[in-house]
Image 1 (tube, one colour):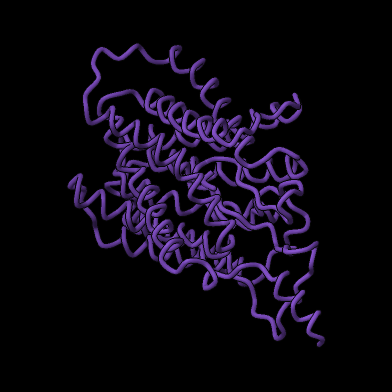
Image 2: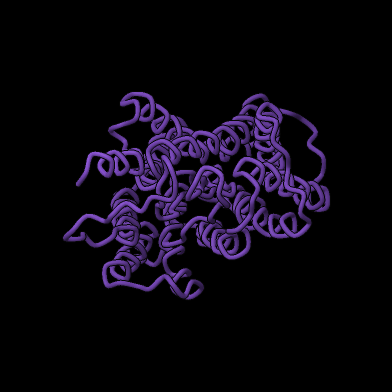
Length: 373
């Protein structure tokens, strides 16, 4: 290989985690995991003072405010296309308004630890749905096995062998339904907004604005205005929105850009661990043996659905221009915002691959949680 070719290959290769600041990205990774892990505690505390819909409205409003400030600082604009806004309205429903509300309602009757574990099933739902909805996403034996292992873990968490005794099935179903909303939203975004020329920040800001508008219409219809504003619930809602939905998206987007989506998405596997620790230590929630064991089984299954078979030879780097390369568009949605990866700095964004990132959206939590690919 000539010197020129070698130099071109080095320039085209995507940055690896080792090439990034060793402490910088790891610190931000840890902060992101803590923010999303504590989001379930914030929801629990928030619902002690406000109705679930009010907690959700405050959450998305605070998250939207953070992203709009950053949008103004960077002098970017919101999308102008009516078609884009229409698709973002659907994304806002499935990636923000609906799952955030379901988690808030769920935590009225289930511990925050269980909600955090249910959130970890998003990759499993995503893999199952992508096989049906995405023709290019073919199942493999490893991914099917991961799906089976993951749902075995869910049954373990719920104590299926003892008839689900001690578990509120309605609350648990709501939390699992919230986790199902994320991959539905990701698949929709992938099909409809993959060719958008708007930036990630612009799309996500508009999405959270629409989620705020949706909840601002619904919340007064089903709740009465709060008569008091307890300090801790208020602070929890503010933290949930500014940190878990606003700043978390910015952190995740920066990590995906710096260390790549494959490494950045690993934050998903720390979220239930942190959520469980926070619930037990700070809220005094009780754990039976099957909860942590089932959580580990869920995470093992989710990891299997995301794993890829080893290749005997390294994949060639396909240069798409000076200083950039084509890479698979995998990204996680934990902030619950539209998180896309670009094949070039100025090219159109691609929606998250739903092999199962939130920049959950989480999306991440952030929502959410939180997907993941």
